[in-house]
Every structure is written in structure tokens, then in C-alpha cells.
Image (cartoon, rainbow, N blue to C red):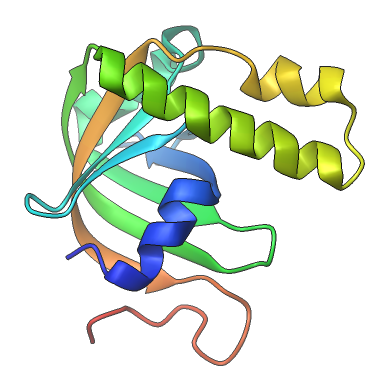
Length: 152
């Protein structure tokens, strides 16, 4: 369910996921890397617990996640799925996040953002993983295929 063509964006793109309550109130959070488990069709998004209080409340209500990942080139995908669990991050997760965050800092400073600004957002260490099972993937890259479900 996680298409190979999305893997580079998942590894190198800017991640952001959103949730909605049963009353359609929305909350969102930027991610600090992601673990991709192709075999089980799951993504585990790394985040900061202090930024996810309402996100987690809404996930416990609705269980649905919409995860967007986009590259600076505008290549982008949206992953829809069902919340599985919150996990404690392993040493491997933290190392993967560190590599990801360093790449993102390099990317955004190369286009003009100050190092201090980049580090204020991406220099922080995640402390939770939010895991979900992917059930649909959509192209979000601008162009004729935007909005098309991959695998249709």
C-alpha cells in the first residue's frame, strides 16, 4: 500500500499530519521524520509530545490520520489511514530522525532561511512516534494527476 514512488519524499520531504475530532475540529502537527514499514503498510511519524496533546485526543476519538509529505520540488503525497498506537522511540528511530532533521535544516538554509530559524523548528528531538496503517495514498504534486489515488 505504500508505493515505491513515494519513498524518496517520505525520507526527504517535509511531513505534516492532521486529524479531526468527531465534531470536525481539526488539529495538525509537523513531523520530525518517519519510519516506513512497507511490509505492514504502516508509517510512524516522529513528533514532540508537547505539540500533540489535542492531536492525540482527536486520534482517540476518530482514529483517522491524513499525512502530507512534500519535497521542495513540489512533489507531494497524501497518506490516509487508521491510527494504530503511540510508541516510545527507539535508538534507531532517534538516529533516523537526526539524519532527517539535519537534511531538512540543510535544505531550508540553502534557500535562505537562517540557521537559527531552521534549528528552532527542526533542531528539536522528537519524543513520541504516532503509528498508523496506510489505506489510501494520493498524489498531491501540482499537475494533471493532483488528487488522483495511487493504485486506482
